[in-house]
Each structure stands twice: as C-alpha cells, then as structure tokens.
Amino acid sequence: MIANYGYEDGSGFYYITIDGDVCARCSHHACTTACPQGVYVIEMDDYDDLVAVVADGARKRLRELCAVCKGQNGAGGTERKLPCTAACPAGAIRHSW
Amino acid sequence: MEQTEHYWRWSEKTWQASGLDWRHAAAVTVGIDVGSVSSQAVLLADGRLLAFHSTRTGSSSPDSALRAFKGASEPLGLTLDDVTYAVGTGYGRVNVPFADRTITEIACHARGANYMGGPSIRTILDMGGQDCKVIRCDERGKVLNFIMNDKCAAGTGRGMEVIADALSVPIEDIGRRSFEIDEEPPPVSNVCTVFAKSEATSLLRAGWSVNRVLAAYCSAMAQRVAGLIERMQVEREFFITGGIGKNIGVTRRIERLIGVEAIKLPADSVFDPQIAGALGAALFAHSLYRKAQKEASSAGAPGVAEVAGA
Image (cartoon, rainbow over all chains, first blue to last red; front, side):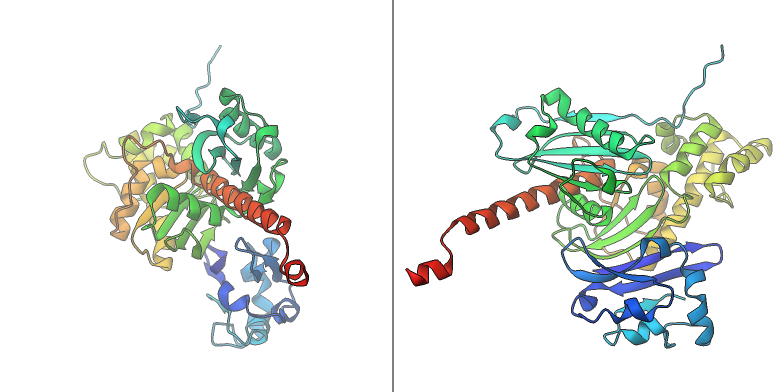
C-alpha cells in the first residue's frame, strides 16, 4: 500500500509518500532514528504489515517540521539527500516538495 | 418565540433486512464508523447485510458509537451481548468502547465501496464530514494507494452544512437547486468553512440568487476535490462515498471536471454512500471472526508433532 501523508494549503502541497510494500521488507527502521523531528513511527497497518508511517502529530505540520533538513540540503526535493530518504536504501520514502 | 430552523440537519437513516433472522446466524458482526460529523453502525448476520443506522456524531465518541449501534440493533431486539465481533473505524475509532479491533477508515471505505459498487471499483473518493480522501484499490477492495487532506474542512460535509444554514436551504435540496440556474457561475473564490457564511452573504448582497450562490459553492468544492483526485490519477471504475456523495451538485461537477462518471447505485439499492466505512468495518469484522474460528479449530486439532510422535 502506498500512503500519502500530509496536506495541501494555500502555500503548497506537502506530502510524504511511503511505499508500504517496500517498507515492510525492511527490519532496520532507520528512518525513525534518522529524522531529527520524529516524523516517522513504526506501526502495524490494516493488513498486518509492520511499516513506517508519518506520526499523527506530524501529519499537519510537515512543511514546518521538515524545513530544517530541507534547508540544510539545498531546499529539499526528491533528488536531495534528506536524513530520512538517505536512511531508507530501498527508496520507500519520497517527499512531494 | 422565534423558532430556529436547522437547515444543515440531514436525515438520519435506519434500515433492516426483511426475512433475515439474526437468531439463526452463527455470527453477528458489527462495523461502527465514528466520523467527525456522522456515525454509522452496520450489522451483518453471517456476512449478510442485516441492518444499518446513520446518526449525527455528538460531543462524545463512545456515546455516538453506542447510539449508532442501538439505532440499528434495537428494532431487531439485538444487544451488545449478541455481537460476535465488532470493528471500529473513523476519526473516533479508538473511542468505540465495544470494538474488538480498530481499522482505519481508508481500508474500510475501500472494502465497503468494493461491496457496494462491485469488484470493478478501482478509485474511491470519500467526502467526509471534515476531510476528503482518494483511495485506489484492487478487485478485492484492498487499498493500493491513498491520499487525504484533513487539515482543512473546506470542500467537506461540514462546509456544506454551514452553507445550508447561511442560505436557509435544507441540505438535501442543495444539489438539485444548484442546477436550477440559467448558466454556471464562476466558483466562489473561497471555500473556507469559516469564511463561507460571509462570502455567501456578500454574494447575495451583490444580487446573486440563492441557487446561483449554491452553484458557485458546489463548483468550488468540486474543483478543490478534483485537484486531489487528479494527483492520484483516477482509474475506472470510480465510486463516491461519504455524505457529500449524495449531493449531486458536487458529484456531477466533479465528474465533469475529471471526465469520468462515477458508478451509481441502482435506484432500488438499500445501500447509502454514507455507510461505506461502517460496512467495510463490518466486513472486516466478519473476516476476522472467520479467521479466529479457523485458528481455533486448527489449534484444537491434533498438532503435526503429536501425530508424528504417536
């Protein structure tokens, strides 16, 4: 299951996409420790796969929470190496902005 | 004394299957969907639709869940003690006191839509009370991809309720009346629920008819949702769930914008797009009950090791 967590507001489209089928094959869960803002947590999804999800409290604050890492990485973008995307060698995590 | 009309108040709905006696069923499973605006309960007897009830969510999620359950079960003489397995879903799913398990509304809407619309359904738009989701699923109703926007209530059921009250139009008439116009007006610039009332009032002051304002508001809502659908790329067949699914003023305009017609339920169908989440939850409850039964019967049978050692 591909999950898109985030929101759209007047300033833009802020979504983190997690490919659950790819994520479920990983047991390291390095994304959870790589993110300095604690955006990711591991949860059992509806089909009993253990996957990374964007934490409830972070879903409506992504622009603000990810700003620090994106600033350090040349304003972010899917091609840039953010701590979370770099920690996921399988490429299950993508940012929309 | 001045009497206040509640134009936003949509009809609560109850339905029971005739000729289906739950007392003869091996399992009665229940799905409870506690949404931000409405709560539904769906009851299944051995996987067959037994009853449902849709009611308004109150200030307490547990009370709303219980009210929805009682609305469906009391006419049948069924109590919580008769329930084999219950699944809670929706915004308030963790507060359904009698749920054996909780499952997200995303998975439940996909499964419910698959049951109502058939296995050809691939894209589901759920227009809820305070959020909006686009879900892609497979032929079994399993979610493949989803996107939701719950940061803002614009373009949701609550927004429509505010407009109904602001314009003194019963909410169930909005869709029809939004087409009783000479030509389609431009969409309102602001679908924000907070500012909807002031924008509607200023349009009326500018000489717009009530129907024209309704058309402009439905059109803006449709545009907002169509943007989310297009990001996911709609795959046929397309189905709309949630309360707004019953508002043709919005759904027909969405169809026009995305160029895909949504699957409609037959006129004599007992289903209601608003119960999709609870129906999906009840179907999950039935599957989970059967899975537990299967596990219990295999645990009761002689194990492989015992047989080998005998």
